[in-house]
Image 1 (cartoon, rainbow, N blue to C red):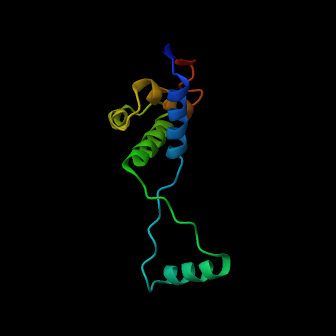
Image 2 (image 1 turned 45 degrees about the vertical axis):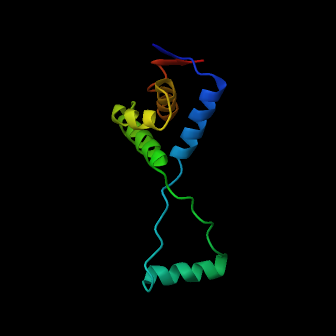
Length: 113
C-alpha cells in the first residue's frame, strides 16, 4: 500500500490538474465558405457568439492524455508520468491524480492523507 502524504498546497495542485484534465481541447473554427461555417454564423446570430475558448496548453494535453489512458486501462498510465513530472507535479501528486481518475481500482492500493 502506498501512503499519499500531501500537504494542502499539493492537494490544491492535484485538484487544479484534475480540473484541467476534464477541459475539452479547443475546436478549430470552420473554414470560411463551408456549410458548417454558414450554419455556425447563423447560430451565432440567433443565440449569440460562443465565449472565446482558452488556448490549449501542452500541460493540459498531457493531463488529458494521462487521465484518458488511466481510465481506459483502469490503472495509472505510467508512460505519461515523466511528462507530468516535467510540468511540475511530483510523483505523489500524479499518484493522487490517478487515484481520483480511477476510483475503486486504485483506491485499494493507495491510502490518502
